Image 1 (cartoon, one colour):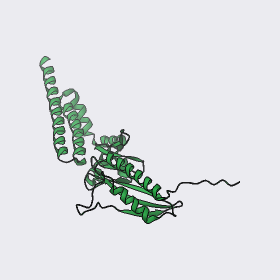
Image 2: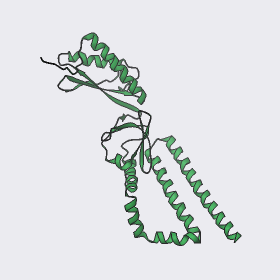
Image 3: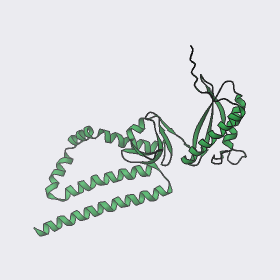
Image 4: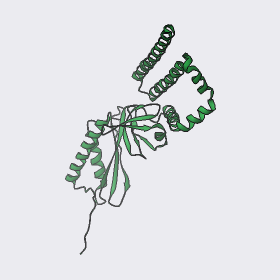
Length: 266
């Protein structure tokens, strides 16, 4: 009896040690690959590999002992029943896993990039993608876990271009009575004066700044430009500095920024 118990204990320890070794090996390989390139492919498939490892460990553990072997064989031989049960009970999980694979291969975004899920109003920086969730660090510091199947159905805006360079749109409203050409020039000068703005001219001289009259509405004209920075924090600070410069110059030049007026007739 003692020999049997010792044998069971030894097998259990070996299985657990092998499983833990594989788990840590997957972590190690993942970290090495991620250091070379922050890729969602690596993070997603390491997460999948860990999930498969857990299932295999349970299966091997169940097959090693006579007490659980018959139950394990019965469960895995009843393939049709298992498929039906899994399909019904875990359809949401399977949908998330499949969507995660689609996101990993299609790669609409990568770790460290800034995205906006337009339909949900969620914006932030991608931290990770697991078997079930895409992890987004919101700008207020909170972590948002969005199911992969939900992300896959969203209208998604990726604000990253040219590797680590981040683009941020700025819109400035100007009254119809204002000198629009001068207003556009003021906006361009304000952007050029910001040190955090990245030079996208690729060394061809002056920073490449595009300032356009993008639309007209009930109250005035809308001038639009894009500023490029290296980090999200810099994009916020740069946008704030540029807006302050524009307001100061508009005030000096008497360029009116439209705002709602309410007229009360007596």
